[in-house]
Image (cartoon, rainbow, N blue to C red; front, side, top):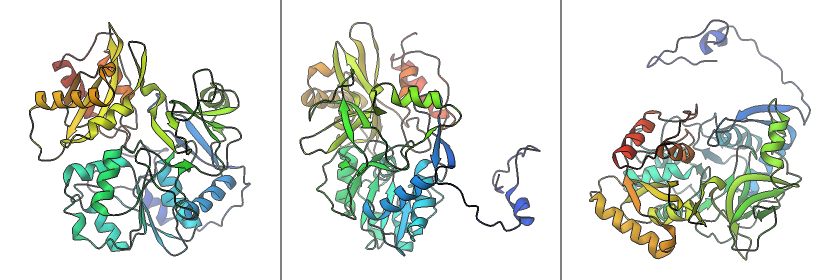
Length: 438
């Protein structure tokens, strides 16, 4: 079903596409249809950072129960208050927290069409919060990195009355401490990092702001949400002690709202999620838990690289690189190295208006990583880029970047926000001599 826009008319295919206005002109009212709690509610394809997207099948009953519970327990929202998930209705955050959860909880939901910057400026989020009295704002960290890049001194934030805004929630990708610190410092609002997946449909880890808020720790999505038994496993599936990094897994059974299967392919659901560690759902994310049970998500497990026999987290390196005052955003990937197996390289976006010599910046970043992690990291290259390839939900396509650097053929995912960024990155990597021949 297509809502035609005068700015860019779509060519509709007979028998397949339906024009919204034409359909509405002849539409008849329809009564609500009772369904079973176990009936499928929707099929939603994951963003495809792992390759071929999977159709996550959600049920009706469990999803409604989990979302209704989460609105008060996690987000501290009450009937009549205004909740804004600044996401896309087509993504899981939009499904869960633009459409279903706020309405189940009796809240006002904000539907926003635009970006955090340049529609028209870096004050767009703060303007919407002021205009509608938003109590809780939920967006991906990449949105706040974009605001930080355009308006690093938060001049735009000071132009609006955001007194109604009590909490800023972030999820969808790892919230790096520099972005967390900047948002807290410039807004004066509590920032809550919480972690979940398309597969879960709601938070796996978070801070229960409506029950008992815990002290936050930069880099941590706080504690497991009730219903999730999280354990950190080694490659053999054995639990690891606090502080040791491994694969993040959820002990079965899964709580309400989690996927029931992969649409049309239960075997793919079983092999993709349930076989790596019998008795567990494997999330595909890596990280660790500290002595107090706080969970730290360090990135996808395939973002752990092997440098001369040492397993190192690219997320940890990104955290260090992002702390440089000139850096707005970065990605660190492992590329093939004939001597060490893999070597990390950094791709860096500069803050708006920052001017620096790339060679000087590279040396400073290398020194920072060497100081924090040590020479063992072998972090010796950092290049400045204009943009990074991302999905429309803001996730950096690191696997695609690795494939480009390794000279491999790659498929452009349907979820990519800006396909032109790939050829741009490929050209820069070639010029810098970073592309190895497959």
